[in-house]
Image 1 (cartoon, helix red, strand yellow):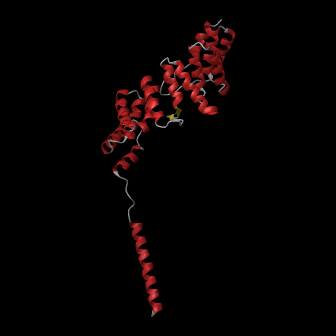
Image 2 (spheres, rainbow, N blue to C red):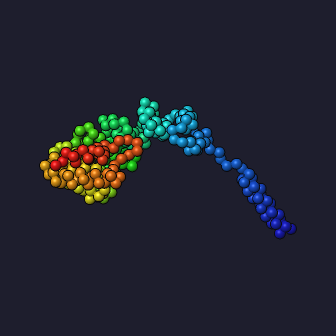
Image 3 (cartoon, helix red, strand yellow):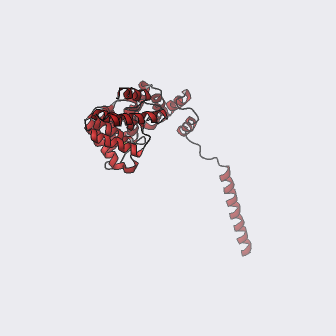
Length: 270
């Protein structure tokens, strides 16, 4: 009798486990909420399309305090030059979450809006969130971006300080154009020997640097060394004709060099 009870209890336990497992299989998985559904749907649309923007508007209605949504909606408008639409969206994103959106906003103000004073303000605010720690904005070192801001404002001493920092902090991994732009700043201040050193460092790190060769030619020309100037211009022209140039598909690169520009300088060089 005791053995029969044991077998009966074991059978009931197995039956209970089986039924429970079956019920779990039949249960529907958790469905994403409305915001998640819209986010998943947005991935199927082309960036900047009417449907993508409608999707962003719906997300803003659901999550009006989500800074990332406003920033995401602004991106295609920035790319096509609709700044009057993009700017208020960026301002709203920054108002909601300056720590998470400041890096992009500062980068954008520098390269797209060319609003250098506001860019340096945003980049400094972003940098201050993590003192004594290297910061990057859209993949570029924040000190490099600050250097570009100051250079464009004509504050060459401050620009050199920022380029010094990024070169020291990044070491062998520094963006080679930090040397180029620091060299341009030194040249503008009349420190021609220091400028030559920077342009030559840029070339040593990247031998196909047409931009460094062009400005090396310019600083040699200012120093009166015409033979070295002409040789540098010729190297710049040779590289440009091979397609080695610093460019970006969405914005004009600062101090960009073209074939026509180098040819003009060569024509004037004895």
